[in-house]
Length: 261
View 1 (cartoon, rainbow, N blue to C red):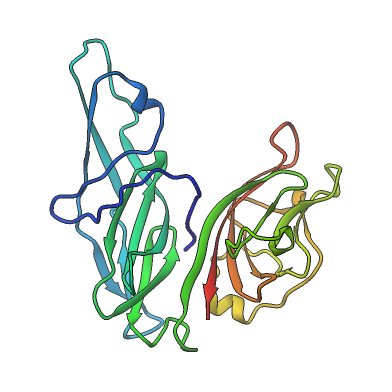
View 2: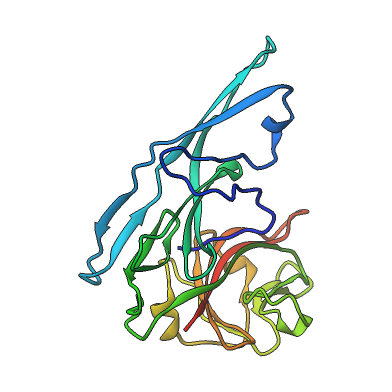
């Protein structure tokens, strides 16, 4: 469902029969004279969703296999199989949408959405696509406004709308000062829902009950999902990827998407 992370090094080329892809900066990029090729099974599964007869589910390739070739002896490639981490939908210029599948290590594959379909992130591994103009919510056309991933420590904030303007545009932060009162909380006039174990999207969050108080960090678990109403009035869905209440890494990492409606 959720997607996006600032600073990811990705290719600007669509993948097709001859994909042009690069690998984000990492340990392997430091090995001298490496020629790296990304080998993918590019078949994309499309199958009907039970929620709507006219909705199709576009599935990312299950994994990406990197082949490493070097002219220097003694070097050995390890951990070359990349697992799917998240998905995102970005603008490809004009009304074109680009569906991105992002794997561990920053490997990205992407393709344009099929003509006549409007797609949104459905979950971590795929997209829900509806005939353009209908929208997946049945309430008009819904599209992603901004997607991202943020690692928040005590006092740190994130703007779910991606405005990057006044600090008062920020929507979520880690409030509190001690291990017992640290909380994942709404900032300024934003609001959040109670966390739940199941995945949420626009339709769930449009009907959610919102609160102005935070959720104690010690009560939050990786894999929790919750909704937000941003300071700019948008609906957003969030997933908790990681949380720490002790040690040097106190805080939480969340993946999020805000919607245009």
